[in-house]
Length: 175
Image 1 (tube, rainbow, N blue to C red):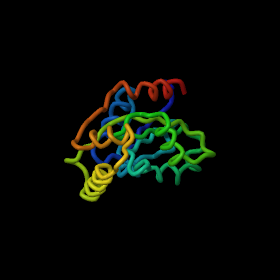
Image 2 (image 1 turned 120 degrees about the horizontal axis):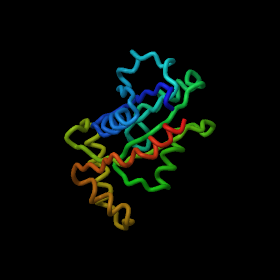
Image 3 (image 1 turned 90 degrees about the vertical axis):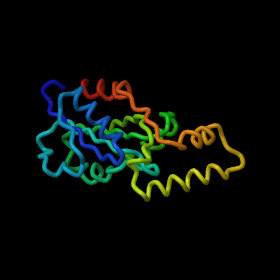
């Protein structure tokens, strides 16, 4: 990786994905830039493109950018990461992967637990979260995961940790 140019592009709504992107860029000594500002970059100069977005209703925010540019990135190493409030349960992480990355694309995927920040959330997302909370509350027979989720989403929280990015860093450094 030492002679390869790396860039981290991210889509962050409440700050968690930005935090992880900055940790990754600091560790790799590369640039991190918001997707909304990335059109100023000449992406053809990069060998490795790391893309990160927060999970929203099962989809990675901004993933359309990667999907629509896969042919442009055919000679690049593309790495995807997602952040989200739920714990990294392997079955859930695999669902995220399948719902976001085309089957015929063998793109490396990493998931980092982050949190919920109601203070920075858009009004529409707050409304959706309140509907979700109400739905969980009204459910008669709850699984352990549903009970835990109901408790966890009552307030803002942050489970972000630098250690979670270590597998991604190891992977990128091996390229």
